[in-house]
Length: 283
Image (tube, rainbow, N blue to C red; front, side):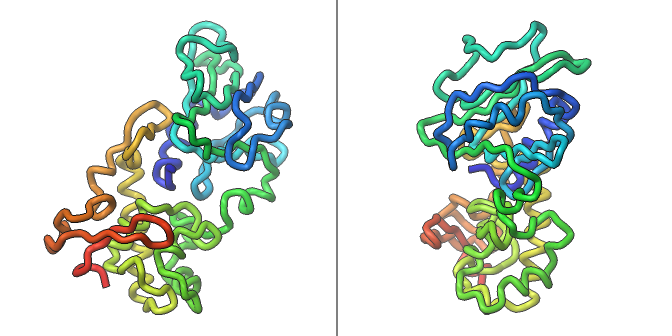
């Protein structure tokens, strides 16, 4: 599942093609996504002009008038097809028939009409599409502080850890506390911060929280610059792979030498997820 850097990359690459367009028509081909797709989804979108494309946590958010947001929790791919001829919502030979969950016909701007395509390869349907009121955005995407917001400070993280018996990795992945981080980037951030993933959150010192926040800013900024991590079939809004997987220090590198001290990276299961760390560099 794409995390903050991947969703941020998709939002940034799609914004030029979406902002300013009007939604002419929508066809939903698969409603059995995460949480289901409401019967009113298409009707609530049609006729709206798209004003902005942003990100909240792991969700891409398309803003439209009257305080209504379209939330997309992408598994892998959303993209815009620019077409020289009037596009259609009918199936064509370019469609991945079993993977296309929804299509939106977008009105013309100087670049011409286009189709917005929501794709989720494979049999597992864990993407999400919803049109919601802006007031419900935090409840949908997770009410936690965004790691790229100015509000994500060492003081904020230290306060979140107090009286928390959960491992620090679990706290960072809890979207009610911190919105946007998942397994890949939590592993990488804790390595850069020198903090072992299984440490009880309440036992972290202020200095350790400062290092985690600093590492979060560094890792996420680097990952966004590199277009995210393509460890499976993730692509950005222009169909390009990310390259940050080449810079992973610990994630999925069990048995390989730590880039800092050359000690073999260890793996364990923590909060139901594969967890990777250096037993020497992380305390």
